[in-house]
Image (cartoon, rainbow, N blue to C red; front, side):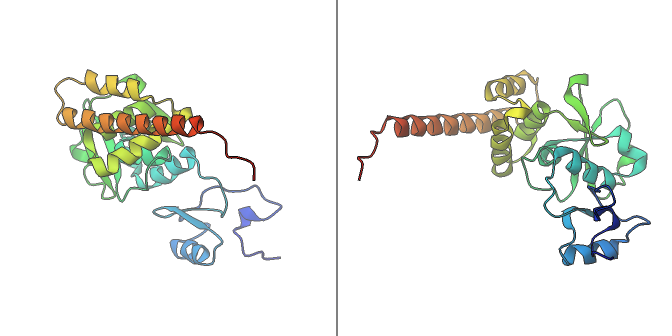
Length: 219
């Protein structure tokens, strides 16, 4: 019996998490299923089943499909793209991909859906998620603070700091930014972090004042 769902969604088949154009379904067919509510758009030409919890691994897999095969092992998803992969920012219009300064990037500039940045990365700055290299949460927060305008950076940084499992702490982040020698926008990055610290202090004060209020009299 045809359920209207992709074959892997039927009861006698294992669930598939990510759909993209392939010999199984064309781009037009995937769009049609999304319009019918059978699939949910994730990123670019990737879709997930409705109600599936979207994880960093799934976002990274979807992003990896946009990166040309010939450069996938040479680039690292960073900045707001990495923040999105961690669930702390909106999906980017174009992927921000970092290239270690040791690699030549002249041959990589033809990736239309990507913006390439030449950077210096340490071994502890990168992790592999869903088949894609991604900057660690701390390095992501540092790069967002340094290179992204405040109106987008501050909300993303707030989200990165709020996700305990990511392990980013404001004091550690501030020290990491301060440790960068002679980088542009360092003072602006520190101002963003100061603004976040003030917001955190204000929230803590509000919480303390709320806790200090006497309980309401019983009706």
